[in-house]
Length: 119
Image (cartoon, rainbow, N blue to C red; front, side, top):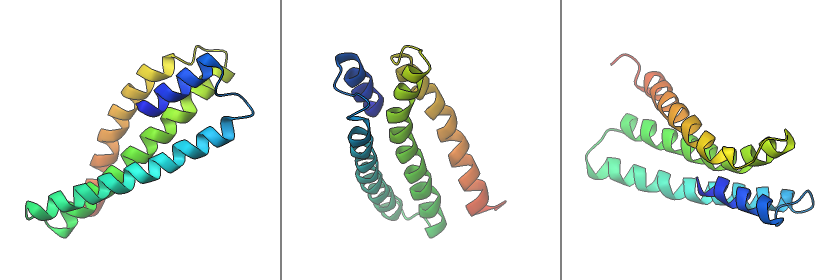
């Protein structure tokens, strides 16, 4: 997760401090929105090109939106939270990967079940 890497590095070299944290997190949230919008658009186009249904598009784009934005935001917040708990912020890198793998599958399954029902 690039967001986690940027924050971890910033914490390590002193570029991310209490004074710059708000600005840094706002930048990461803006990046999350931009990347999410791009991937949702590409995902929707891909569904259309492969003749998917509107329900397929809804599942894929909603799942992408939640997974990508959550990943970037958690990637930015987790290193800071770990540092505040006096745990090495570098542990956030591997933690976010495992967390997002599990969350990604869970989100996709939940959205698929909700949108597609038992069809």
